[in-house]
Image (cartoon, rainbow, N blue to C red; front, top):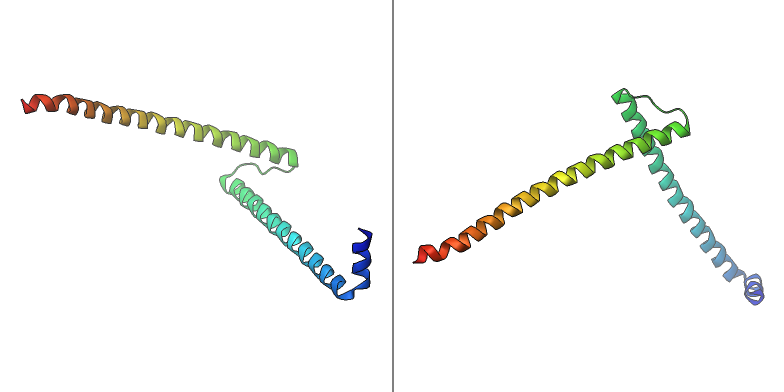
Length: 114
């Protein structure tokens, strides 16, 4: 490790390249974090806008915000679960009807050929 450090210090061109690469890496990380921060802020603004538009109480503390988000997620999960069950039941009914038709058709064909 010391020899690498000594090489960098003795060769200014290599040192400049390493510094430029480090700056680019740091800039890239900051830019990604900035994008993530902007997206999160936009989501919060949209959420608060929805709460104001729908006439619900806007949370004023982080605890209240956590409670309302958790409650919304639970309600959404319940709604999705109910919809999945409805679709599942509908598919089962439709599948049973198709199978019944195919079985009836299969057993009715030999009789019609006689």
